[in-house]
Length: 421
Image (cartoon, rainbow, N blue to C red; front, side, top):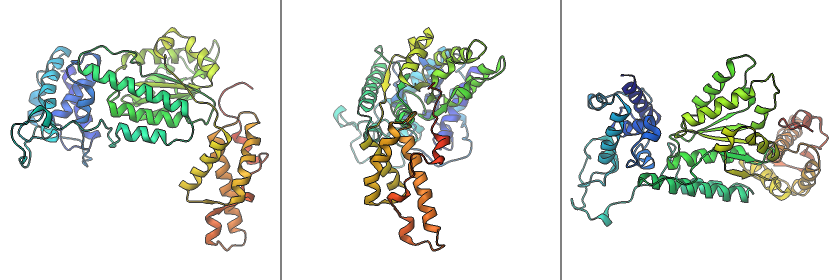
């Protein structure tokens, strides 16, 4: 009973996540894959089953479970029975559509509203190819890779992500053909200083993982040492479990992860690491973990635990942005805010960035965002100084609005991360 209820709950969760009013065969198929994980039949491609969940509906209530689904759930009382049901359901739903029945009709188990004008017998070459793999939000792999390419700089990181996604897509295809995977770990180490786009790329990577079926949802959960380590015996494991539970189906991103191992003998960081390693193994088919931080510290951190070393074998480097790239990022932030930048500001901005880059704990894109926010505050103060706010004053930022590097408003923002000076 407990096993069947777990499958039933996963099917309801899938239907609700995609806005469908009732549980359908496609949701049951996905639930079986989620519950079986590594024990799922190789003949049922995860990416293809994930694609059946689209298009997304608009229902918000808890989905109902029709009698026909309850009847299909009844014999699913063990992993063996679930594997048999999964294979049979996959064969029925993922086979090429016949007599004009489209993927939506096959997935829902309902007849099409109207018959196709095409012939009832179609040759193999006439069968329409499946739609691109996509996430719940409708993202496709090409669109997400284009979004990745649109980020400023990060040439090497973009190339690394593209290689990783290529490996995962090929492995997904190999799984569908019953072939072994090669180099299939989807856990990553992001190395680089603060503000170099690691979180942004991690969020995109989660959506890519969701699009190709590596994980079931593709969302990102961010965590730091404070979210994972408690101050009392027995509490750290519970904190780690809670964070991992939220991240299931997506990516857990742990920034400054090396801080977990820097608390000393009386600290519970080691317990957090051990718990995380175990949960990564328990949920290896529906969880990706990305740890991030400074290069030297991260390599020491990974080498400190054999479980980490065996699971994190893929590194992505995020170097400092160049001054020109940071100017471009400043311009992108301004464009998003619909604020024009005066020529004198564009002339003065590289010098401001250059002075900041030569100082300690430079925050890269974080520095630029803070600089824009402080400049906007100066612009706003200038606009209201005479109690007459003119249209030009709220849409044009000038050089005089830029903060000085010694501006006291930087003080609380200069120290980033846990790195010792």
